[in-house]
Length: 488
Image (cartoon, rainbow, N blue to C red; front, side, top):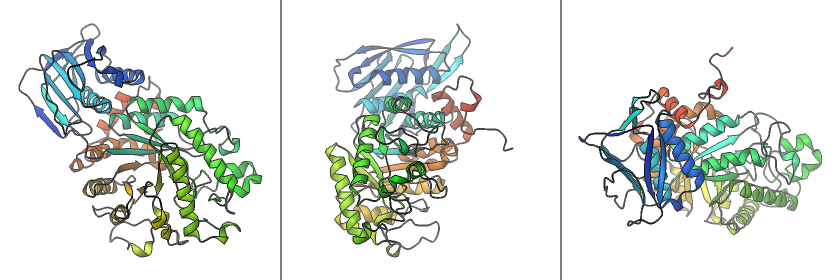
């Protein structure tokens, strides 16, 4: 390998003493079972080979849809006849005669290819004299967590180039799901004032990002906050997309505008229309993220005040669950309104997130549909103890642990998710996305397998990976993760 390590770290790498596999400007590979791989994915694999070969080599696939083995397989040169174990997601073997990649299914094959391209090393990059190699090696690999996601916000201040870089890097790092949340930045057909004029994007601008994520083997999960954050803005900013445009929409929200008024049938119809547009945008999938966090003003309008908050919330969530499941999607919700700080003491180090004590909404948990997935965003847990995730799991829910950008927090929740056998982990980036990019390779390694890797990998290697997956074509404003070299 060319860098000091592979990202994310494979479970088992065996270096061989055999001679390395040599190749030049064009490589041909026999691809078996290609029908599992869409055209966009084939194009992405070719792109990765070309970039990781320093644009000095291209790969072409000779396809064969019928093979003797029930696996996805790529052979470059002579088949090295590697055995793939039942516990492997993919396996790679390289020696002087050839390179073989095997996987049990398409996504495993795609992930194996992402490792394979990282094995490419240059000898001569002079045009017309191209010479590269892959060291003799054998790799057997599989993830420790099946669900490995990342949550990306598209703010009015976000650059789509940054979102694209995040998707490409997340794809290379073998994440399985990308949650996309629009903060007044998607032009819905159902209501114009849900997006900021001049700071939002249409279907044809966002769809290429969706297709890109899917070409890396990732599912895109649409997200819309269905309770708090109805402003499509952060609470510290004082903005509200719809009400800053049209005060006659006020009854869709609680009096302060921060929370949706869920006792209003018009609100429910509008949110249903938005969900349907998001389903169309994101394509087929198994999940939708409904938010539900930080609902500070829940049940404060004259109509909602007639109901006990916990019962009103439980009815609303079960209604949403039934509706989402009718479209084949399991709902994901944030955890904080469903636990009380009184039941979970603040840890000695860090902090604990719980908002269910404010309006008594924690009592809704016992009545909720167990098909709902709880996204436990505990950004203050800095050790391996994660009592809230364990609490939700014991209550019968699938749980996704959601760390933020503290390295200790990412490690703690990744380790905890494996020990508790949680549904998975979802990295959150919020308004810190550019600063998050350099730590994404190490974070992804923790989700994949190696929680011992730490965050000692330096930013220069993260920058190398980023420029391999994202071609800036010499545009300074699109390079790296920082927008400038100086602060003034």
